[in-house]
Length: 231
Ligand SMILES: NC(=O)c1ccc[n+]([C@@H]2O[C@H](COP(=O)([O-])OP(=O)(O)OC[C@H]3O[C@@H](n4cnc5c(N)ncnc54)[C@H](OP(=O)(O)O)[C@@H]3O)[C@@H](O)[C@H]2O)c1
Image (tube, helix red, strand yellow):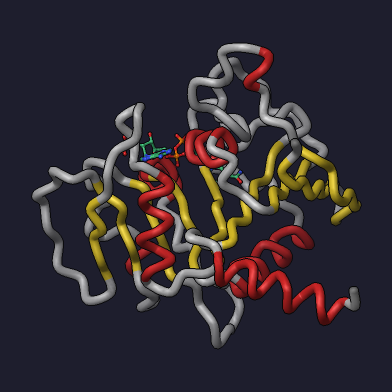
């Protein structure tokens, strides 16, 4: 199959899927940590990796994070260079704790906040849509339900940027098509420092999430690993 044909078959596969095409991306230290021990953000990416992430954001219809990341990092989640295409933003926020002055509301892109079914709080923002979602078996936003809602709103590709609890749940439910981990040559340490995948972890060896390495490359001072879902 030629490159063009492969590209076209991926496009038609994505159109047929009930959920967006999902790319998970995160930057970690050599010991798998993604923030400081007190959860504060730190710059882990190299300049080259930063540009790669901006390109990913520009390519995707939306960027998703959890409320933990909104409350600790207050990210804008936009493409930082002058771009004609800015992604929509999505937050998983069961109790609707996103502050009205959060930076994700800046820039005018659509912001979808996925909240639980009983949320009553409202905030007025022209670019905000609250989507009431079913909860899953752990009382979190049901990802399959949320992803279907996003797909119905024209989100065909989604970049999941964290934090550790969100990445864990996408991996656990095998809701991803590509998984990028940038590993910087630094060590952060700390027993409760956020890691690439937090959440409750697997209970048994048989539940381990299998990945397949698709590509490894040196990016700046670090390495970038592209994983695909394993068996
Ligand atoms: N290095 C990187 O690439 C990177 C990127 C992003 C973030 N971070 C770091 O990650 C840390 C934040 O991670 P975090 O684990 O505390 O928070 P998080 O993953 O950003 O958000 C988790 C929260 O989202 C809500 N949620 C609702 N439905 C969910 C679902 N189905 N699955 C998962 N979460 C769901 C839950 O809160 P409710 O129950 O209140 O809804 C949950 O506690 C920060 O330290 C930040 O700096 C690092």
